Image (cartoon, rainbow, N blue to C red; front, side):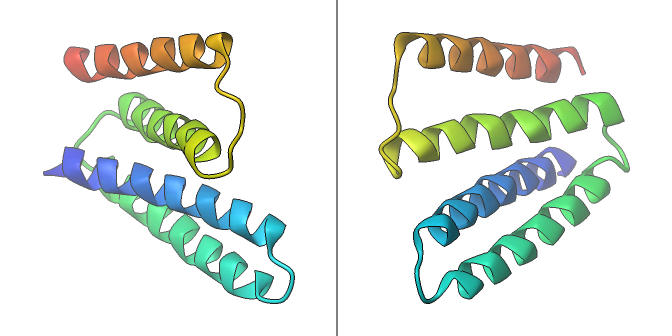
Amino acid sequence: MNWIVLIVAGLCEVGFTYCLGRARGASGDWWSWITAFGVLYVLSAILLAKATETLPLGTAYCVWTGIGAVGAVLVGIFIFREPATFWRIFFLTTLIASIIGLKALS
């Protein structure tokens, strides 16, 4: 169950990254994006703390930041039209492999 909580925490991290990107481009309603950023940031931290009650802290933190990092890159590529270069995809793939390896070992 705590793995699911950890995944949701990571997705909240992706959500607050999305909100930050939208706030950057917003002209009049930037405050609503910043508010959503703050809510998702706090929720993500609370869920991470809950997940670490039973999961090893080092593994949980790495998975949480990994989900956020991978998600942020994917949001950047697919929503904010950032470049999908070979090296970005290569290192994103190695990050995903590392997260899977940590999960498999714990």
